[in-house]
Image: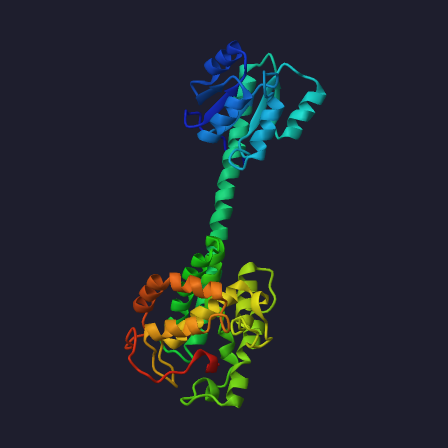
Length: 363
């Protein structure tokens, strides 16, 4: 059922006509019900519509300079104004003129001389439609946002669930996601893409679910057979996430598969080289290694931050893309703040231990 808006000055009507008498008559007929704005040229109408809220436009066709048809085309070409309903009001009453008006994006066509009861009725109808359309768009945006947030929360929960198998606090994925966002922004990635990386990064090790505890929780350093088993977690993670049309899940599957590839081509599982490695995984690789070095593991104690940074620099051009290393170095203050804020319970922010295992010998 169509709900008509109440007649009050909250709705703004823009009158566009080069004839002052036409403007005066329409203004007198509508001023008690609506807030009236006036333009006598198409160019001025565009300026007003782009600079303030306008709910509907009554637009003459024959005007000096930009005519009504061209004005409507410009309104519909601009994302900021394309949703404003345009009603043509013209002395040109030929069917061809009406067809052009509708083709330009107009919602109605009133022929002069106008009958004011008709104008009022058409305004109320189109304002009601416009109001309901905006309400529906807001509802769709709200539901879409809620769905996206739910997907993000599910991904983060699954990532933490996988991490709990060999990290009781699960804070590794929290630190990782923040590190990834910080480094991505320093690298020059757009905010939308950096947020996407932050969202999917907790899923990078989801494949650990398929690794036997005897290997995953081993207290000693891994031997060659162990490493071969644990390296399977990349393919397992990719298979868990599967092929899905959602950009969110596609990105999550991609980082699960490729986050252990190396810039020099000596990584796994597919020995990708250089820019063949997806950018998300080139960024995530540094965040993952830095957090692994600065956290306690069954086979080692946490490295001091300075030593971990030095190791990242040492591996620039071999394990890591040099440009991503530079972005990491520029981001150190923010990264250190995250490292401290989300330190594992009972674990110091850094350690003086000298029991190290270099990046080149890790899984």
